[in-house]
Length: 406
Image 1: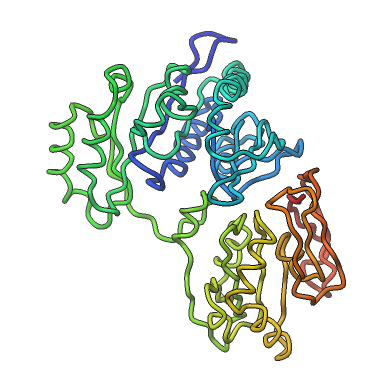
Image 2: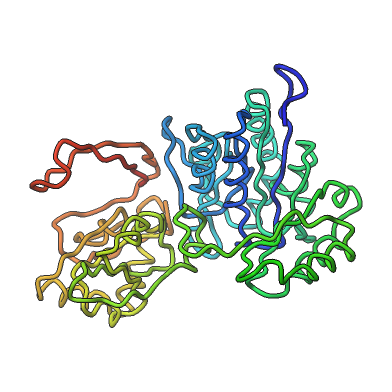
């Protein structure tokens, strides 16, 4: 695959899905890697992402971690143009809107949809910059490719495929069941001009011998007149950064043992950057548990209060569930307690939101630290490096990370 001419507009391949969590992000990353290894100058693109798993770029912008992974697959540094719009839900009704890596505003659903025309302009500007710089762009869609009620406000699926002139691959998840309804139903609901863009179907997450699905492939092709490009296996424990709901599916209640370092992460409604804990999940001498109730903390050596997109609401959630008392007992027994971002803020004397950055209000903290947090409108996003200072841990090495906070 090569561009039509030097300096010309990139060719495009769009990975759309029959629904959420069918594997679009991972398949797009795989295509990026494949093309990069063939010497093609390729880059990822997702017009709009809804995720609390975000990545800070070198120029201090914020994008979805799935696009950062895809950029790495291409051998590129992540850039805000690869994900020009990032929605970070703060509640069921409201989200923080990030445009070109920076906070653009807070919107409830209807008011956000009223911004579609302006947002389209930002999306197309990002796409055109990438299309002039690369030979191929791999576009990831969002949710289902057949959201009929959203078609006139579509930013990331068919409107993007049409603008880019993209060939479309449709991904379905057979592990959930109903793959025939997923594929046939989606294709039947497409407009004729959309259907003509679909060059193939990928059946994802098949368990067992894929040859046993040969009849299924024939049925799909006969009913849709679209070729099935492949049947991909279900891959267990795929340690790649993905999106929120995918990460939630990976929550494990690993049995705590006397031989392991037992770590419990408190589950809160607006938990952000689940990927903070992927490294722990991969350690053979660490047992990682996500605690939905205070009883899940039993036996933990370390309890972690994670980052959150709504600190006050999630602190009140922990308080209402009885976690505060359980944390006091944990520390009294000699257990360790760690707070990350919003979780750290919860450990102080007070958290206040005078400007209504999240939802407004003021609440007492848990009280382990003599600090008070005031949430302000300016958001800090930056990459950082540090040197471990804990005895002989990784002497002479540096670790890299990020800051994302109000």
